[in-house]
Length: 374
Image (cartoon, rainbow, N blue to C red; front, side, top):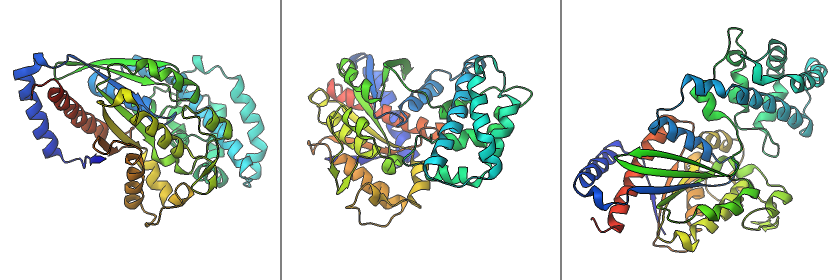
């Protein structure tokens, strides 16, 4: 394995980009005009967020109308956040304030009756109750200890923004809101865009266990694949049902001395299967170790040993991320294959734009080599 980690040096990226521009000007006709990219990874790893970022960067982003269409989905995310947070409090057996305990059953019933499709803003009655609920210390504790619950990572983002989302004057989602939305990808989503006069087709394939059997149908003629793994999920466990439904057919068993699979285990097994697939022998692999911001918050509270008992270094961001990177890159049997690894926060447009441009230049350069141009 020859790992390659981009450290984000703008000067290097600019130099590479300039060289690519020159090559395209001279030899562009020799390069394959349509470049096919895949976005693969487990559910909730951030694939769809990366696809949204590509839309922002290369396809003029979201119009006011596009953003407005996302309003009901934002309201659903808020409702889901409230519902799952309350379930988590009960599961963790936290003691809530008496007024919260008295209020929650009525709030949950009220949320079920609202037709959010016709709402211009989040309704005032549940808004006041949600704000009260989110101010309960037990709710914050449940969010911080959400590992074995279905509480979304974006819960804090949306509940912190409840004043804005419930503004009496009306609410239009922001781009940040859209990037934080949780929405399950079913089937295959395709996006086409142009970069440096070349046409790119990128496919986002549903990461749910039941969707993985469909992946093989989009594996032909791929130039490069982006594998997205949420490193923040190192402490979140799969149920036995989820583990059994995995494409890798991994059932819950002893993994580093524990009777469970974490979501990060699942990502590792999936990366091994993808990275060693014969269809991808000549395909460039870009590994995004995503949700680094959430990981940075967690690692100070929850040791990496809950996932990797063999981890012996300091429980800090630098050492832990380096270890995770090595574990992923070790999954590839061909030790001469380049794996381009990046720590990412998919909701950070500036970082994603820089990385995508740099990685795309690398993909084009490699395509030049394969076509014999350079």
